[in-house]
Length: 212
Image 1: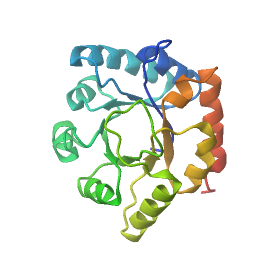
Image 2: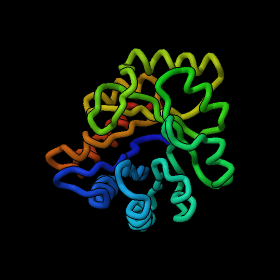
Image 3: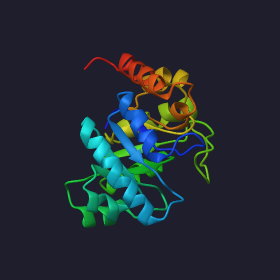
């Protein structure tokens, strides 16, 4: 996984599915459906509709937390927080045909997730965000640089997705710190024109990537 990962976020103006549509119209091709306070039945209904939208655009859909829903609807993969099902258990349930991501806040988390066989890591938070409860200590740029340096020294090559209170202006420096991508929610949904903001952020990410 690399580039922009959009995480759904319900606001007074936009619901979950409209937020998926906005991200897709802006060119984002990696969507995570995150509905922490919704009932599983509502989450599955929304996930099925979101998958149809993603399939129509050739986009990948990741389900936050709900491993069984991910498997039933045939999503690309699942993202697991530190209090969710273990990646090892999720792999047993899903098999090898699904992408499994995990949340990390420290280098020690990175080591554990590497050992548990995740495919990518969401590392954060970069700064304070009000879209997540029980926020872990903030990393900032220095934290990303330090952890990525430690991972290289330990031969841990997992793609790192930066997350947590990131704005468009932060993107160049974070990408240059060595991450594979950026996860955003509020920065898109609170913009005056969310579709254009998505396009702008994708251009920023692409322009800051080192040549292959």
